[in-house]
Image (cartoon, rainbow, N blue to C red; front, side, top):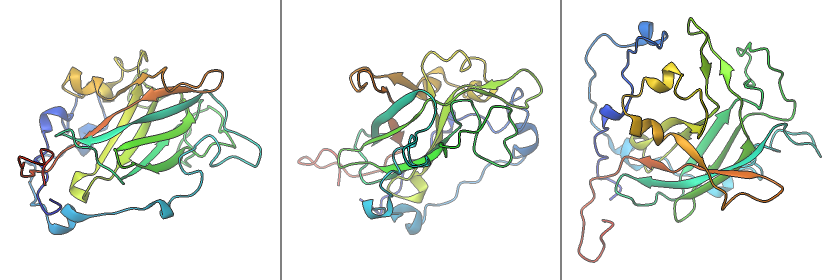
Length: 241
């Protein structure tokens, strides 16, 4: 199955390259039709990852940048979910990288000039691997919303960035996760550039009280779907080859 091509990307779910209310797209949107490149063997068969490449606290953004005995400031949360392909099959052993602003809405980046203070104990990035059933989990701080220069009074909703490596480079996904109940979701031009309300809803994590630890930390569930392969289905192995 590893050499089978990935299914074509459904561009109707993706925002258009040009969106009038998102000013940055005015200059960077392509002016020529998109080209479709064939998937090569390299894009179909790699990369691969193992637990040995992860540090002991890579999946815990609350402490992975903090001084000894200290923790990051803000509301503590667990983010977890399942990584599957579009045919419902779990995608195991895959690297998920995340990065985000701190509780005040500021990134630890030299070009972030927002007035919110930096948290000396929060680096804002981490990573984890999916298990045999495609499950993943990491601990972090609830990020804050922040203003951005779009020519008006625009604020980004609280969000976490995800980079997900599937079975091949052609299956890689870069996306953002939002939090249910955030009023900025309906106001953000970046979010609203997505043409489908269903697609937007799939970017929103739900509060998961079953995984919340009483008197300690809340949990949010965010399931991720990658495009699948055109696998052959056999009578005795319905998930494919």
